[in-house]
Amino acid sequence: MSEVEVEDVLRLHRLKTASYTVAGPLRMGFLLSPRASESDGTAESLRDYGREIGTAFQVKDDLLGLFGKKEETGKPITSDIEEGKRTLPLTTAYRRGTEDQREKMKSIVGSNPSEEEFEAIKEIVEETGAKRKCEEMAEEMVEEGKGAVESVESGFLTDLADFIVERSY
Image (cartoon, rainbow, N blue to C red; front, top):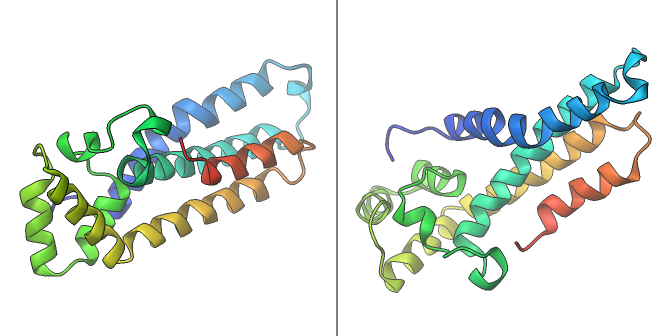
């Protein structure tokens, strides 16, 4: 955990989830549409929107990986910890944590945590303010994304952006 920085996690989210899952398909759909010949900046706006919304989606997914309900997310909530994933909440908590908290995280992340250990990780993420920081970051990204498409007439894009941070699955 010690070698990973918050910006590294965000860069991975932007390059992987945001680019391939949201920004690329949005831009491609537009470029294949009849409006593609218009040079009004829509393609760039959609790319920017997709980058922000896609990154917010992944940040929310990271949070749900710790604080979600298996019945809603469809995956075991301990899987990110078991797999040793360097998620944004874990990385942020590690960076903000005390030496004791960091040592505890290093001993648990990447293992098969007991219920008590899993709860200890969640507690550290909350105590360090990492959970709230990640929620705020996702909300800011959504606002940035919505701002990028203000000139594009689509209530759907605004609704989608809001859903990203409000979802529980």
